[in-house]
Image (tube, rainbow, N blue to C red; front, side, top):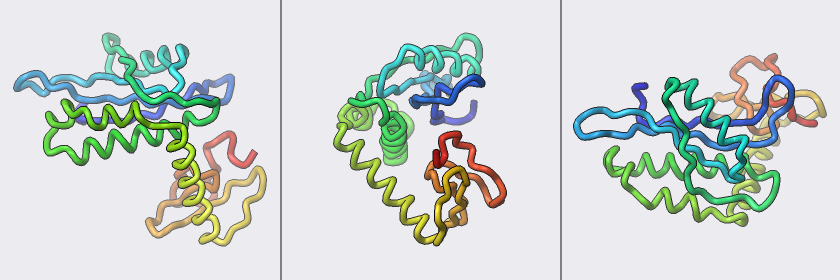
Length: 187
């Protein structure tokens, strides 16, 4: 409740099946006059799936109480069935850059530049971003001098002392015996 901005990656996995789609729920403080205001839930979905809208609404209620609603927001749309995770990461980066470059919280809220940037993401940019991420994680694997084995997590240490699984998405901590939490890791 004390935060001005919270980014929540949202996946459609449940106890019966693995997840297939990612979207981004953003909790953003809305100021009202001199009061600190309340958190508003904004949902950015690159495929605008009805099932994800209902999941976002459910999560909003779990995080902020029964009266909370999720508000779908304008954002770029993917043109394939597999780029949702890349779009989520790009949306998060655009929002964070907008937040960090604003001179004040009010300036961030009324700024249109980051909101317009979310809509203008192109499939070509998403593809380039995916290649960049792949390149960075390939560098980590090579620097770690490990050989990935199907079904086995590979722990990668980098200069930041963070420990990543070789699938590229899992920060698994400093204990190399921890298994990757990604059910699709190296399958």
